[in-house]
Image: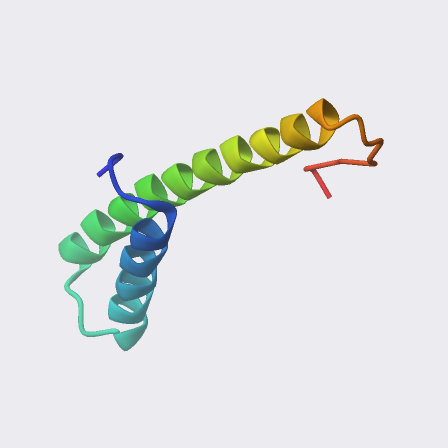
Length: 72
């Protein structure tokens, strides 16, 4: 699952959310889907953090001063 792109991970996450929102998922399956969703959220967060760090480094390498705060 970790080899998925950000877009693929987000798409799969949206599919899980839609499935769970339907209410037609047995409890055991819902728990499995929730666990899968949490893994996808982690992957997306890691990819976003990496992208933010890369952008900050590129801007810094170009000598431009920016106010970059990824926690906002």
